Image (cartoon, rainbow, N blue to C red; front, side, top):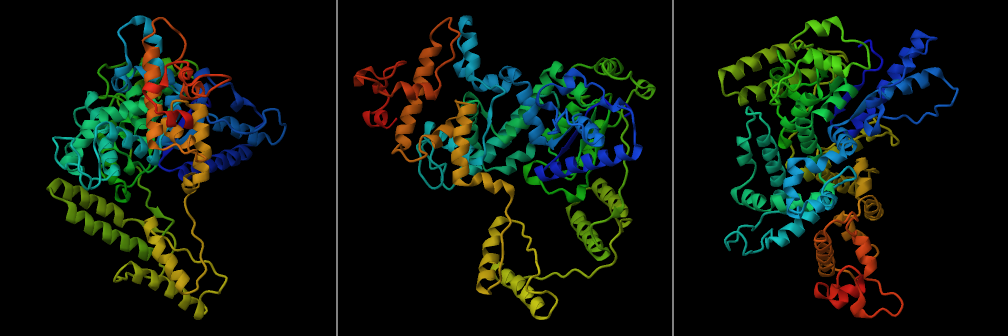
Length: 591
């Protein structure tokens, strides 16, 4: 639009892609500013208060008082109006921004309901044990640690162990914890979709994503797992999107603030969106949305995405009054709504006044600048063959046929190139040996020099071991380039992070479990369980105290109360509650 104050939200799927989008945006703005050679400061107009407040604005690192390059200053100002990130990072910003609203969401309130008391005088205390904007984000190892505690509470043992739970049968045999964790994720999505008025979502295939035993265990412990997370002020990556969706569905004030902040929404790799992500896009969109996607490149079906996302997009937006039309129970007058959220900017354009329904326009990008002609043709044949084998109805075949015709018009821009080779190896070891032998033969023939660099690209990390072994056996030097995420998986980094997490959120028990044993202090699982049970007892006692505005003691406060001071007698330990009925003498001494 022509209004320089209108904000843009650009969403993609990976951090690397988001960083690349941001870099290109900055380069584009700098070149555009230099090309116009404008002497006017009109683009440096003040930003609306709702737009620049809190973490929703990407703040540059330029010194506002630096009298350097005006183009860079102007670019930083314009970038402040654009939020670029992944779905998870954008959702995390929204939840932290509106953290005070999280405790009122039905999902959170129902999960931590066990802490709620009937006395109105204690209402202030109950909020302390729920979710707020200072939450921690659990990675998979944290989730599995928490899941282990919940399974222990329910007397369920996994992976080949017998259990008396679930009717005394060996129901949990050969079930891995990660399988149960994934099943809980599926159930959480089912519950979230069931709570909305949307009735068109098909979740029937979730039955095929898990076995009967897995679903039974996941159903039994899901509520306890959610309660354990939220009561520790923690969320996982699924919660980031599910809670943001719920917040936008139930809070019109939040929705209006975000619509005023982001008047235009852009989504990259749209074919990889799930139903939850599609709903997020709809809820954040008023009447300006731009997506890029290719149904033939959908690779995330295992997490809810489908190639039909592109066709679902047209169904979700075409001839709709606004993005969230059909998701909410009440209707709005879009013209008046847009006038309201644009009141601090330029007045609503005549085009938007006259347009009563949204229209979807499709633009096909037919030039391929990445691959050669032979590669593109081979890909077209593979996609066409796999598409025909997967079509079950005449409508699907018609749609697939029209897509094939469009695909045949693709124009490769890098020449013909060599023909692709397809080689079937006996096993992974033979494949690795073939790759390394090929590189050595190219060196011996002069195609490569000993100082040349060759990249081995593989789909999964598990394949690297065989390639490394082949390189070692044939004396080929190599370096493994891992993802940046592996840095945070190092033990020393996680040790540092657990202390930082405690400083930020003192209720994060996963961080506590690591911190109290870094370095080793002789504290085992039994002592740690006793300490956490003692913390729960102290909190329960505190919640029974009416009309108090003091926050319950944190695990740090409770641990310090166990430290003897002066001539303190053993029976005097624990200023909040005598610990000896819950913790053994050995555990008390360790802490």
